[in-house]
Amino acid sequence: MNTRVLVMLSLLAGIGAVLHTVIPGVVLGMKPDMMLAMLFLGILLFPKPSYVLLLSLVTSLISGLTTAVPGGQIANVIEKPITAFAFLGLVLIAKPLARHKVTQPILAGLGTIISGTIFLTIVLYVLGMLEGSFAALFFAVVLPTAAFNLLFIGLVYPIVTTIMKRTTIGSLSPAVSAKESRA
Picture (cartoon, rainbow, N blue to C red):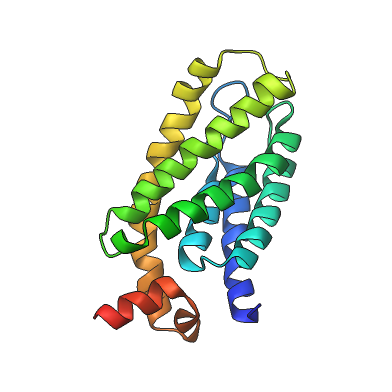
């Protein structure tokens, strides 16, 4: 593992932790998961299974520590690694479409829906810790979060890749290297 990549991933996790802590709960303590956006950004920049595993474990622990949802601690630890590897699969499948500007935001929206579905399933049905219906929570929290993450990645991903092109860490990212080879 490259130290520069690990520093970049830790910065993304730290930013996600601050955003996740600051954002207030919306419905029954549930809030938009900004750690997810940072997780997706890290996977888009460095789609390597070892980095994905490390980033997913770090974000799951931080999300678990900062959640206000009953049972969210356990659900986050289970859900984030599953979501991270599902998202990595989506990224690898969509690799031929990566040159389109809408690909990464759409993947982030789909990844958020996957994450929210897994999280709600664990909290509602496996742990039984949360009152409410799946559909109501899905429409009240997951879909708005998916829309937000779609917009967030749509705005932030091009900025981050442009910055990374100008640094030495950019050469370590397949996402940035691929864009340089096309230019």
